[in-house]
Image (cartoon, rainbow, N blue to C red; front, side, top):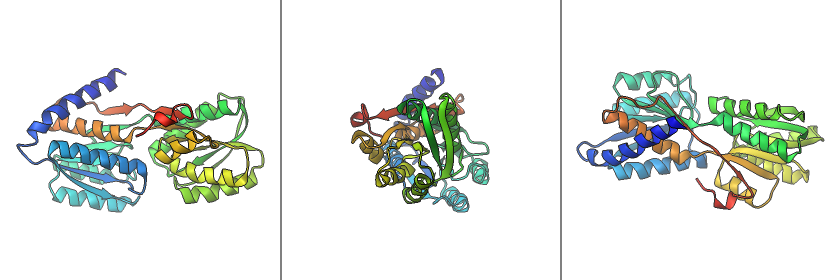
Length: 303
């Protein structure tokens, strides 16, 4: 908690001071996303645009489309445009190390957002993903009264997803009557997850619960569950508007552990600005808390 409060204090002070300082020299911020076909990352971009406007800064944004070669090329293009700050949402934590090294070779401040990257990153700002997976699977176990077969709808093997699965398994292990019977990859995609879960339900007649590593996959899983007419509980991670509405409507989707993508961008940019304007003790890592969303509080929640 102390680390988080320190980081947020730096964020507030930095954003207040830098709005005036930015007038002296046009600040240029580069942001490369692993994908933009996801409301989670769209909300990040919106927060970045809002912050840049308040700073009078220029923003260059690219979409890697989960292609690490494109992401590296995008960063190289940004460096040619003389960016001051690189906000990096890596599509492959190890694969983008060359891009991080290239940015640091030009004295660009690098902040990894949502997922960390290999190499000399100045600060990493991301959700407590293991905690998110743990909370969602604990909610699933409790909803099933600690009994029954469950499955995990996995995703792309990047660190945040791996951490969510790790946290989920840790929570499920606390319920002696819960049995993890299947793990399949829905690639965090609604249409892929729909087909995967349809097959999963057909092959697992006693399945009672599913944890999805993200809300995109969960919405596909929800469609499969509703189409089957089965009583299968569903939990997830993210807090996407569509998922929150489904939870509020009383569907089999009973819980998502929400992340705060806008806050990750705001704090990440503040860390970069703190260093840009001379701070010498910027945290190397800033964990952002997560929050469970259920039918009881869904109406009040938004990113």
